[in-house]
Structure formats: structure tokens, C-alpha cells
Amino acid sequence: MTENSYNVPAPQIASLGSPQPRYMQLAKTLLNEIESGKYPVGSQLPTEQELCEQFGVSRATAREALRRLVQLGLVVRQPRVGTTVKAVSAQAGGYRQNIADVSDLYQYATDTTLVIESSDTVEVDALQADKLEAGVGETWLHLRGRRHAAAQPLPICTTELWLHPAFRAIRGIMGPLRGAVHAAIEEQFGERVVAVEQEIRAVALGREQAAALQAVPRSPALWICRRYRNRHGQLVEVSESTHPADRFSYNTMLRRDWEAGSR
Image 1 (tube, one colour):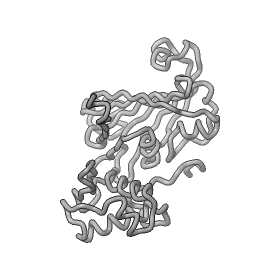
Image 2 (cartoon, rainbow, N blue to C red):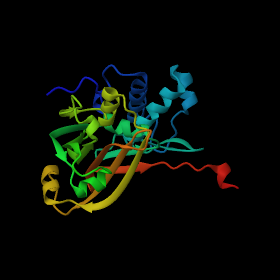
Image 3 (cartoon, one colour):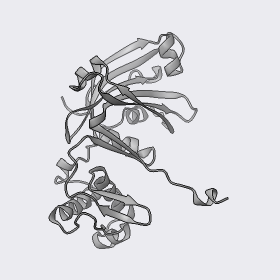
Image 4 (tube, rainbow, N blue to C red):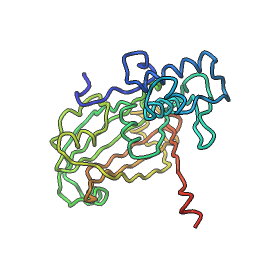
């Protein structure tokens, strides 16, 4: 099954050697230099400005290349400290998601592959209506699938998605999907997602989920629900993903407004 035409190729480590945007080429160069020992564990990589001067790239390109190395678990970035090498090879464990702003949710979708396995139009019952902020009897599109990451042989999560009735005729989302479903909604229907609400809980895997993920029933997992809203605050999409604890980690950077905090 082929991937859909609107999808963006996932910037995984396995594909860094193929023709790529400048930031991927820079990330590959830095990765090679780390592996060769030029930058040993504990050393500092060049600053963004130094990378711009050395490689003739923009600040945005340098920043994105370093972000890729963070996602691979090779470096850690700290304000006023810089970028420190913490490993000489990409981590082989579960997928790590780094969140600094809403755009990182798009990156998560392009860094992984969601395989949609079932699609049904469902009349919302009372329980579902509460979750979807919908009226009983509305017909939402219900999708089920599993998400995969290149470095992880097993699925990293099961995913359920609910799309508002206005978007239930969405095209091209069955099978392997690299790219966010809400991005496809924006492209096909002209709707714009401006806010994402996120809820996270520790849960135990149910028997059905464990079977789908080839995991142990009742083992620990992370449940993440995201609600995507348009400019009017209306729900466009609701997604619920359940990740086995050993296949996913979640990193968030919170920045302090020092001026406001000093008042």
C-alpha cells in the first residue's frame, strides 16, 4: 500500500543519507562527527551561530538540525549552557517526543507512521457525545490504527481518532499515513487548527490493546488524548493514543517569563 500524496517523508535516521533538506544534511554531518569521536560525550557542539558560519545555513536550519539530534537522544540542549553530547549513537529504545510548541505535534506525526486499519461512521451515543462535545445522533468518523517509529520494531501505540461530521468525507487516510490527520483536514477542507488541548494519564493496558501492541496485558502505559480546535473553539478532531511504557517517552520544555516572574 502506498503512502498518501500529501504526506511529508519522515525524517528518520535511516533516511538521512538520501537527498534531504539542508537541516537533514547538517544533522547527518553532525551525527557522523559525533560517532567518529570529533565530539565525544560531554563535549559541546558548535552554537547555532557557529554552525551558520561554518555551513552557510540559516539560523532556522541550524536549530532544526540540532533538534533532530535531540530527538535521537544524542545531545541535550540547555539555555545558557549550549548543546552537550550525551551519547555517540542513536537510542534504540522507544520513541521520544519532544514538545516545545504546537508545531512539534506536526513533527511527531511526520516522524512516525500511523497505519489506519478501520474506518466507520458512528452515530454518537450519550457517553461519546460528552467526550466529543457533540449532540446525540451526530455522525462522526471513527478511525482506528497503530503508530510505528522506524527505530522500534513493534507499534508504539494504538490510536483512535474521531473527526467532526463536517470532515467525515476526508480522502486518502487509510493505510500508512505520514503526516497529521488534522493537516489533511486543513488541506482538504480549508479548516485551521489553532489550539490543541492535551490530557495525559497513566493506565494499564487492556487485553485487546495489549494484543494489538504485542505487549503484556495490565502492563503500564501512557494514555494521551488530544483535542484539536478551530478558531471558534469548536472540536475538529479528538485523538486517543495508548503507549506501552517502554516504547514512548515524553519531554516538555517550559520557558519562564523572567520579566513577569520578577514583578
